[in-house]
Image (cartoon, rainbow, N blue to C red; front, side, top):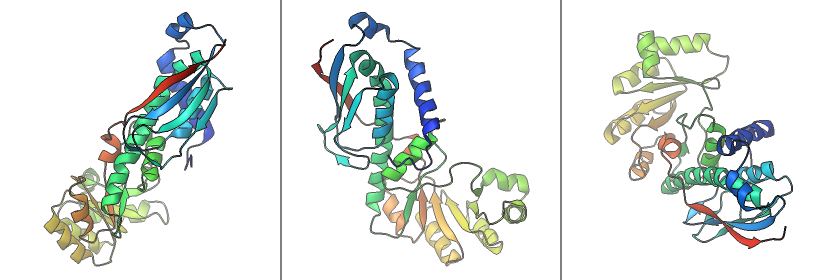
Length: 286
């Protein structure tokens, strides 16, 4: 896994928290059924067509409960898999395998779901000079992993948080008293060299914004005809991002207007978890 900003200490902490939430320190079912040290082998299987993401996170979950567990990936993140593909083989203490199963699969299904829908959007516009980007509409505490999954699917990361990019939105503009004043303050008081992006909802706001020379304009919830007019108005004065109401059916016609970026919140906040399962294939000795 290309962690892309996901450091090992954070990942270890996150996995420990996820396991503690599920097990509370023990799995009473497996303790009742199996003696300590009994070994087993399992396959992790794709139950539908999908784009894989998060394999090393899944491995981390198993090894958190059994550091000697063997985890052998048969494929890699970014691979497009067909239903029935064996994703990985896991071998270790049966108590650990079964206790780790749900957390491992939850994460693998969630991240692969994001990668899968992202690739669907990317494929619709792959011959056009536009980038599909994510947003901050992510699951709390999962942003690092979810944005990683977007990249696996071929998308790009927008700003990670509130600290690494200036994006002036509707409520900022209202509180400042106007688009121009908001841009002026951002230029004057923002971190040196940081780009300024501003959201506009109509062509009048766009015209005002352009007089103050933002680096990026975000066209929010505009119809196709208005987007086309906006592209003509900008004419290379700024990068153009479109957001709001972007569906798999509309993404190509939006891209064909000549915009530079299309940001899609649904690829993280509404991605469907894909179907992945674990099956014990060999009950070892012990």
